[in-house]
Amino acid sequence: MEVCLVDEQIKDLEFEVKEDEELKLSLACFETFKNCEINVKVHKNGKIDAAFADFSKGSGTLRMNVYLLEEGASASFHGACLCGGSDKKKIDASLIHEAPHTKGLVSNYGIAQEEGKLAFLGTSHLKHGTVSSSTRQEAKIIVFDPTSDGRCDPILKIDEADITASHAATVGKLNDDHLFYLLSRGLSEDKAKRLMIMGYLKPIIAYFPESMTERLTAAIEGGVAHD
Amino acid sequence: MSELVIKDLHVSVKGKPILKGVNLTLRQGETLALLGPNGHGKSTLLSAIMGHPSFTVDSGSITLDGKDVLAMTVDERSKAGVFLAMQYPPEIPGVNSADFYKAAMNERRERPMSLFQFFSGLQAAYKEIGIPFEMSNRNLNEGFSGGERKRNEILQMKLLDPKFALLDEIDSGLDVDAMQIVAKAIEEEEAKGKGFLVVSHYARLYEMIHPTRAAVMVNGRIAVEGGPELIKRIDTQGYEWIKTELGIPVEKEEGPMNKVSIGVCATKEALGK
Image (cartoon, each protein chain N blue to C red):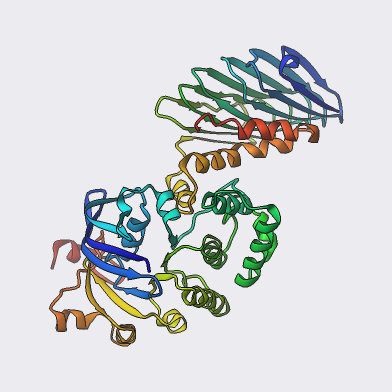
């Protein structure tokens, strides 16, 4: 099943993925940031692939909890978030592994610009008995202006020995050497940064239905406030 | 005819002086071979001309037809006609090659090119440089081999058509065939009247592109300038004669050298015995 929710449609929601079912859930936020909590329960060999693209204004927390309840359940969450103005945004994607042979991935990319404050949180919890399960948390934020702030706090809670878990988090500026390369070919600083940011956020489009491509591309291209 | 003039240029990196008074003039239509031992400032000079932020110009001047290059931003230098083919072109994740080339070419025009005009030019350039056109759809340098990246630099040089091209070890990582293709492309641009400043350690590239002049950089200065015969001399004799004939001691590269190796008594080395 494929579910794509835009702006007002994003709210507190519950989903249940039944045995052997697959859910593609994509959320796109263009206007106002939504403070909400989405809970997903995944049963035996079920699968959820979630994506969240956010170019909205406003502050708040988007929380998503995925419960991998039975054997073979798997989940992925891909996020791309642009945080500017004086907005404060938190994206908290957590995976709760309750059964053996469960698999999870959380991967978030973000840009903090102007006075924006962006935080990627998220706990991957591997409970006792979740043998042969694997989980990964990755988060990367590019901090654009001296006044903007980014924070990545991936947490792994592990109660079982026979599992694989990893996390990676980076907060940094745009790479100076990359920027120099683009500038040295005659691109203005604004254009070069815009290109780099587009390259950074564009991969999220692949997780959305094709009908959304144009709107998402426009939001990404228009996203960098500097002109 | 355009002229790139460097006068008494002093450049440092993180407070450490690298260039200590470089004087050099490059005219359009010339190909100048810049030689010198490793770590004596050749790449620094090229990067400083282009305006890399890691290099601080402490004093001196660089002018292009009388215009102050040091006052220009990096992109302004590019648009003024300076091109640097980098020794290690970085991979730029997410930036599509063709999109980037189009943006860079349009920056120097009043009206953007038509897509047809752009793609036919791009296709021709790829063919000439000998890389598959499909690669234009890949991200910039991402997953490219060392040789592909170098060819990609020459490709961009052709697309952007600068007055002066600075080539930093363009031949490293190239196999013999690729070197011939790159040399041919350089020769063609030489014939069109571009000026070249070429850094390489190997006489082979120089034999193919026929420099009109040569200069040797030692200790952050130009120690000798001369005709192309200088290249042959260095290729056969190395840099020792600079010390004996010109009285310029060649400083060795600094750096924490670990003197201890297998077969050496570490304690004796540490005690200086």
